[in-house]
Length: 156
Length: 270
Ligand SMILES: Cc1cc2nc3c(=O)[nH]c(=O)nc-3n(C[C@H](O)[C@H](O)[C@H](O)COP(=O)(O)OP(=O)(O)OC[C@H]3O[C@@H](n4cnc5c(N)ncnc54)[C@H](O)[C@@H]3O)c2cc1C
Ligand code: FES
Ligand code: FES
View 1 (cartoon, rainbow over the protein chains, first blue to last red):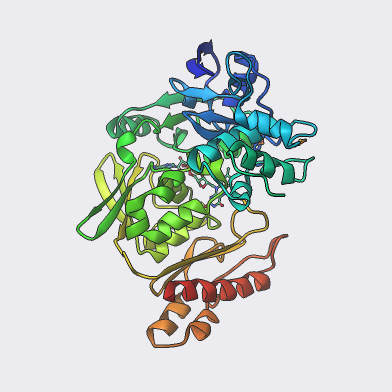
View 2: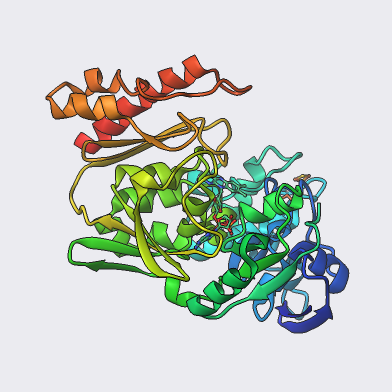
């Protein structure tokens, strides 16, 4: 079927098989490989993107379900002039990434979390990111990054 | 993992959904949040020929209170239910349970109708609906029928729903101010419960203590005849048939059911 999705503000229209998953559409049809596939079983959150502004695991959404909707991937976070999004800046400053594999999903989940709860506690950040797994960082710096991105003092 | 081939069909009205389901019978599957169906399709445990996407049916996303009944549209998502002020006031157990399912991403997609239709004994809303003495409103080619939750969960993943029927609404008695409690024991935070307990007043629903969600009947009867919370909770596993699997033995589950029932009853009484 023909699928049209507004990806990071640009219309992408592609002819795909009905069974195409959104994560494959983004990586293979839209050419945006920032969205990663970790587990493929809806557990790890590496494939998290925003669908109409809400975080979703794109390995468990059909591209067809996003037809006519808006998707934002990690590539859409920075400003047009390349200025980093507050969440990206905070992940860098707080050392919230090591290998970086989970990072795009972590960032998209963080953006969604902050949209609902602009001043979360560390505990609320941990709860909000429970659907995202990181193999490297031990989570502590990721939590600090989200607190920093929310404009709160990072209290270690 | 990629699902087997199927053809995708999006519908824009309930009538259209029923027509398409009627034309395809067993070969069609309703797609709501997709968070049970798509994982099954990726594993090829489910291989429908046609997938009917009902997500555009915005008219099935609502919470209303009418004549002492809370009516919830079947396509309401967990995230919305968790934050819905009307639900929080009149059916606080359901609002709370919706927020305890999976993770934020899952809660943005999963729907109450999908969870009930999937009828997993390990799922939270089915047991919560039993404890809430709720009813499902179902539409099919012959019109509308109502199925009490107590008659809906027939076996593991088995319900009286016909392939050409759609759950349109879930109803529970409005119980503002009535005590409630929910306890869920999981291995990891986003997991399904090893055991869960949902309480409204003196009604107790158990998650994952049998092939279907069940009521803790012996506990309820003891409470009705004036037993203490501790004595009543001690009977929680009496009518259950928990299984032993790698994460928990039947004995451990029964123990958890007793402990969690006591806690849930205590929060309901507080
Ligand atoms: C990572 C992860 C963690 C999870 N954790 C939990 C948890 O902790 N607790 C829990 O309870 N659940 C959990 N779930 C399951 C989740 O709640 C599912 O979303 C839910 O069970 C199914 O709802 P859905 O809207 O996604 O339905 P779908 O997957 O779209 O559909 C499920 C089934 O119901 C049918 N169906 C859907 N809607 C209707 C309708 N209106 N009428 C008739 N039939 C219909 C479909 O045909 C299909 O057979 C988890 C899922 C994932 C992926
Ligand atoms: S790849 Fe989608 S959740 Fe892991
Ligand atoms: S930084 Fe390596 S997986 Fe998270």
